Length: 560
Image (cartoon, rainbow, N blue to C red; front, side, top):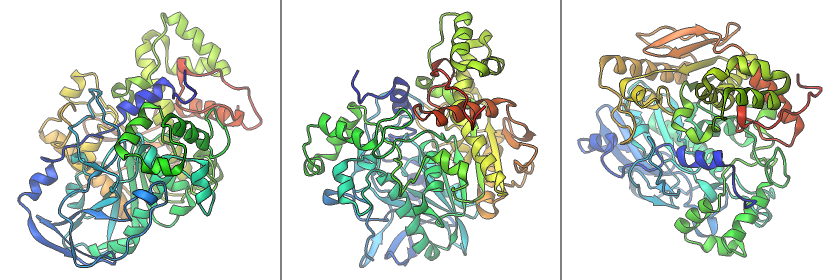
């Protein structure tokens, strides 16, 4: 096996977590509406004059550049600001997606090919025509840091904006073009660091919003960062990055994963140094210099990096990301902002590559768990028993990756005295249930965005019923009221209690139901396991769970 090859579960994640990474170039809900929209929405922010479209009571501006194109000598450099442009820019069409591998795997997330370019650092704005000091909902797409695009019809911001917020969605650099670290790149940097270019793009877009959003009726001091999957991972990166401090006031993390990250120059937590991984990629690409890498065709470079099993991650560089996320949260060094976070009941059902194969028998399952989990084996088997191995493997993988993360985020912010809200999305409908995909990864998104008719071709179709519309309307209310006030409320649905001392959460099934104490024992078990892995210093956490887990490290002074 090549030293550069990532674990099989991560290769599967790359294939499956390209959540809507291939999007329609035409025929989106936005384009259908814009076909009937009127030119005439004008704005004159500091960035420059622009003309968008009127879509009902919304002003819509698309494909707005927020930084210099990261091409040529600017490839693998922090994004550079654009000077004010001259004349009037037409902001009436989405910009191309950032380069990403073609996804040939048949999954619920795959759509038709979309236009791509290295010149992709654009954002889109949906603003109520009468907006004045409106809160800003800043959306970061998912896709494993390999794929995704703000032009995706699933992320059409119109319905959210109709609830009184200004929606901003962004593109950011992906894959090797967005996350490569190399000693030669670090040598070019005043801080002697490299990598994290995609995260720096997100920060540059937030700075653009701070400078310009008032011209669209938005409040630059009331920005909620929000994302799903790798977008939620990005939310956590932003929460711990000093470079992003003060650029947002609230955070929403849907199905995030609080995982270990590579360090720039050290092998830590079972991961090679990011610069060493970069050198291995350069060797695989037969590129002897930075100049050679910068001269490579971006399409070929992206595909070759995927074939060489390059994996994009945020890099602990001491500057943009000073330390492991979990360390920052343990120390209270994260942004002190209200949070709304949660996960879905069937996360792994559409991401089966993440689930280790079942052993031959229930006896083997119990034996493996006892060998791997030691003193915690009894609790693990109580939560994830051997009598239904498939269900237990799916649940354990879900909880170790997404469930523990959501619960920890909410607990951490709650401990700081901040408004903190937890959800569990366990909504089923006929097409999803028939495909054994109840509550699958990202299945909450059409309800959050009100895009029930904008899902990919293989997505289990959401029925056009009053019940589905009511659930979507409630979630639109909750998400946008949180962006306004830090408190999720809905007009025709129950109040969402803060996590607080009772462990309250909102259970989204047929409708929203307030409950307490989600999955007793799950958080404590995973927290104990992660604590030992962090203390050991030579293991990643969360990716290898249950029967795929390494042997639990010994007890330490900090861990049970």
